Length: 203
Image (cartoon, rainbow, N blue to C red; front, side, top):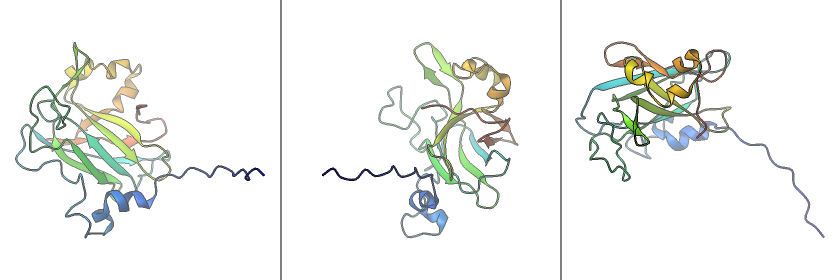
C-alpha cells in the first residue's frame, strides 16, 4: 500500500523569529550576548573616514517597513576585507566589515556607524567604485534581497564602475546612490516596489 501523498505546505516569510534569533537584545532578550552580533563594525580606533549610513526601507505603498533586518558587508578604508581569504594585504584589525541591525519599529530607519570603504578589484584590470553591500529581510520577503549603496561624492569612480555601467537607465542607477546627508553622513533609502524601486541583485 502506497503512503498517502501530502500537499506541499506554503513557504514562510521572515517573521518575528528572525529578530529573536538574530537581534535578541533589540527584542528585549538581554542575557544571550553582551550586545547583538554585528551591532558595531568598529572594535577600536579605525583607519580612514568614519561615516554614518542610514535610511528607511519602503514598501510598494511608500510606507516604512517597521520589521526589517539589514546586514552590510564592506571592505575597510584601504579596500581590504577582514577575512581569511584576503590575500592583498592586512585589513584594519579594528574594523570587522560586517554589521547587522533591525529597522526602528516606529520610523523604519536603519543606521550603521562604519567607515568609507575603499575600492576593490573587479577581475584583473578594473576597480569597483567604493560601495557597501546590503542584505534585507522582512515580513513578506521570501528570499533576502541584495543591493549596493554607492556614494554620491564618488562620481568619477561611479562613472567607470563595472556594475553600475551595466545598468541602462540613469534613474535605476540613482536608486543605488547614497546621498550626502551632512558631514560624513549618507542617506540610502530602499524601495521594495513601485516607480522608485531599488535595483536588487540576483546573487
